Image (cartoon, rainbow, N blue to C red; front, side):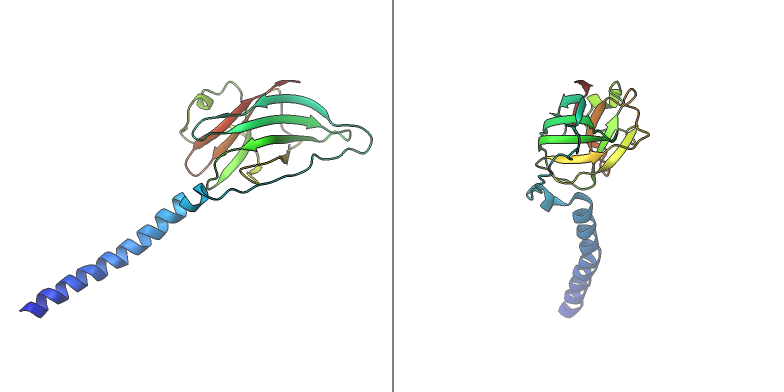
Length: 169
């Protein structure tokens, strides 16, 4: 009589383990809690132009939303006509699936911390590091008359880490 109760308890423990372990692994993968404590530093030099200094077109100060975010976002045009975004003195929290986007400056979603759906913007790439200076090439199709803000955006959770409204330099 006692052994029957013991086997029932061990069976329940086995079922809980079979369900609990995959749930814990899925939660870890979704939230990546270790990234809260690991900083990824990047120190890229500004792209060098052979004949002249790159021309600063737009600039703005990054302000935090969901996470403290600071630094400066500046769009440059090199002598060969290529445009790139440079984040300088940049710092934010680390996180999963964080991207850099050019977005519409008047987009009301930029005033929120969490947005419904994806932001309307131009993808510049995954965030290279959560600290330091870094560069992102702008596609030739990026219209700077339409997209005059930079967002640091976590696509997995639709969270805006930080935003810089760009102004003519």
